[in-house]
Image 1 (tube, rainbow, N blue to C red):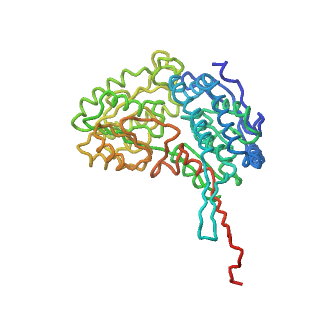
Image 2: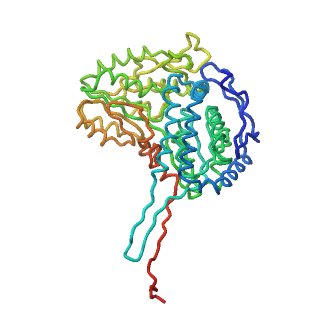
Image 3: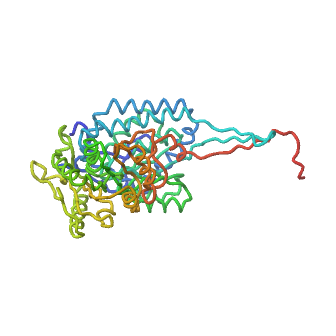
Length: 490
């Protein structure tokens, strides 16, 4: 572990590693409680310095050619690829997710986002329109300025890539704050960014949300805020942006519907159920935490799902055979187990799981058994509130109309899936469910070139896809009169 992680980390401001003015904090491996590193906390003055450095850098970065920005983004991707194993191990130790996920998904997906936006930046075009024979209108995109970005703990590296890549492609400068629970992979990424980016273009300030995070929200000089995390915190981000009359991009919570019809591709569907709720230990905003199964296959599907859940190997995340790792911390374990008790009191039954795992050397970590609730009513709290763990609610349905109604009976609308071989049904249901991303016969596929974001209380704006440049730029209209003559009003 030590060969991948430093004992101490500082703030990265204006291209330099500097001490923070706040109280230092520690980060521990959630799988065994081992101390990983001590990190600096940015105080108000540190955030001020980071924002000032970003604005100084913006004066030249905004005019860097698309060709040069493309070259830099590709170089970042190359450096990440050269350091892929280190980034994967750091993410696994700090977050608790299995190494097979960080190697195969988190790190490659992060790299691909930089490469994708390197291509996007060269493909952007303005617009010229003749208003009439003597008047031309030009529409250009210009960088928005300095952006504040706050990253969650569940996918630190990937969420950083989702936000940094389009911002840099657009010509913006950034002050980014990783979660205090999982800051290490972003700090390691900053070492790579320092090799290719001019000082101040990206600044990394670490610290708690209640201190450093609030300093970012309160700072008057950001031109945009971007956040991924809970809907509860999302309210604060939206409020802070509104007070400054600046835009915000919010990717928030979810309670997504995973819908299985009788003609679903059976084995793929069982795995899709698992991918939907067990990937990253269920700590996924678009997790398929409500499973709707048609009554014709409910009993058989449930039986095989229980067997599949009980076969999952939960273990130390750095072991290659581990299929599900540790929850992020003790507080998350307590939250998940409290929801298990809530479900029982509401009348739901635990078909499998519902307890903490402590055997086979897991007693010092934060491990939860994969859990299935049955006899669930969609109005129950466990079916309406985001648990953020490997806990799924099985709900039976009779027909298409009923399942669409139940799927939409939620304040969230981030993800979801429908499993069927009937393409007409698949499209009907996908269109009818009120959600920003609907998968068909797959789950949790998140490529760079498909937009991702929420309906309702699951967020504002989109992540990924070339449309992200719209979030990180502002439109300028240049209105040109080609006539030599006067208008004639005066």
